[in-house]
Image 1: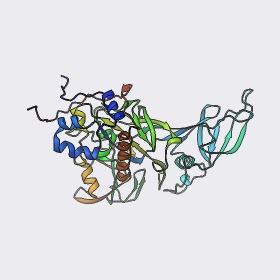
Image 2 (image 1 turned 90 degrees about the vertical axis):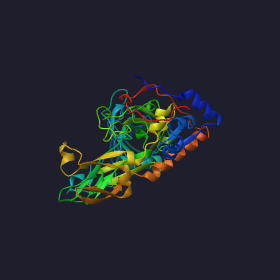
Image 3 (image 1 turned 135 degrees about the vertical axis):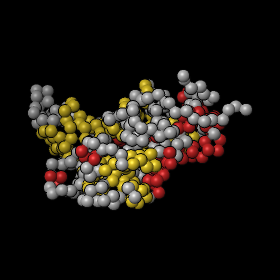
Image 4 (image 1 turned 60 degrees about the horizontal axis):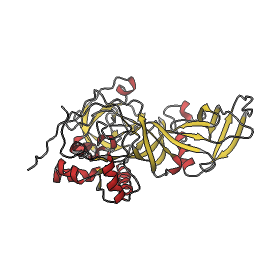
Length: 403
């Protein structure tokens, strides 16, 4: 039976309040205290929008570039940007540069673990910062595109389009990485010391966008978001989007990797404050991406979800020495984000120091910037054109009855 709500707001009602400067906007951190003080119904009546944020390494990122036609015209097939290969099987002068792409002369083929210094993420960050990028391209030549090769400098002001398009970002929960073997392990989650010497994690916990809307009631196709310092959109569900059948906490948040987002936005509007390249020893290159998503408080159930605390969010501890690479990873334990952020977790009778490979500081900054944009009337809430695949909410919550 569909749950009945005491509070029922619409997107248009909230946007009208935003336009008038009357909307009550708070961050997900602030919403925790408001719900604790007022209860979910009164909090839902009072608050219109909750802002969230996350800033972490998102390997499945990249950008479409249109570098403009040459004279004579050319159909670019084999393409390099500062020596990093880009994909050209799209159209004449369109290309896609992936964040994890590495140049052919990168020492990834040398003695393990290797040293990775430069890749696609660095090209994207340098392009965004206004630096010149060397474009080298080759084509087979046709009657309509006769040119066969070109080498020239481009920058973000000389190319037609630069569109950040990431197939899988803002993971809804993620693993805590440990290493139970006797050797050091080098992973995308950082360097893991032997014999449970450390644990790394990635996620903003109570500020995380998809933890505050665990069943995708407000985040869907067309949702307007903060992306890399500019405005972007949810284009579709991300690759590996799998929110069905996952273990969930009492409050409804998944306790393992679940939903993901495909996001898109104009790179020319973004900032290197929120798009950062990263070189990870023994793994390769990744890119840190800042994402913030507003959650409209349409009813008290959504208010309930946006009051989730770090102590109520759990992540699986996974061994990255054998279990993860084998494809047979099973959680050794579940730990809360409160435990992770405390700096120590306990596993098999041992206290293990923890460290994040994402930034809670930047996540908080993003949530506050988005809050300011909405309060100033510079950012309105968009109703999704379609809901992303997700199970129906099935978590009941206690609320006060009308007196």
